[in-house]
Length: 163
Image 1 (cartoon, rainbow, N blue to C red):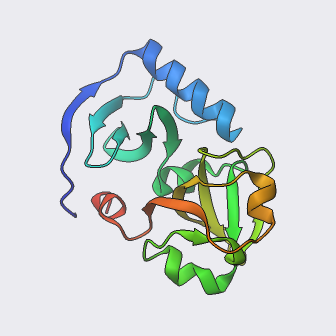
Image 2: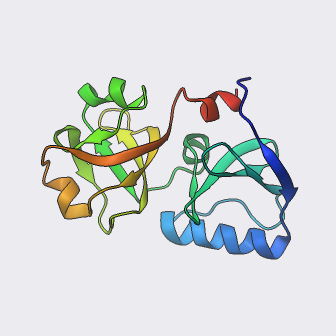
């Protein structure tokens, strides 16, 4: 298990869990944990972390909740995705920001500043979570430059903390 500095972990009340789960469900259009699940909130090095049991399944970045890559694998959402070509996969899994030309598909309704998840075009499995630097049309335009700023990816400290 990788070392990740976690501070101030505390159990959330069922009302708070329900509000958090409802917000995630409305964003990703998939049911996530329920108010009966043991959900903790903790401070991580870069953003707050959401523990469901002992698994880190969510994160809160700039007051916006989203799922981690492990959470995406567990709940399998069909919204807020950006698909990259297979040539970009090795860069994404090494933590590089996603560039416009490597994107093959993007979900409707993405705005600048939204949290999105990145998947590959062949297997369609979650690879990373990032912040959209463009809206849906800008992402689909394949212009040069950064389209998604990376937050968390397969193989980083947060991913390894769940092993």
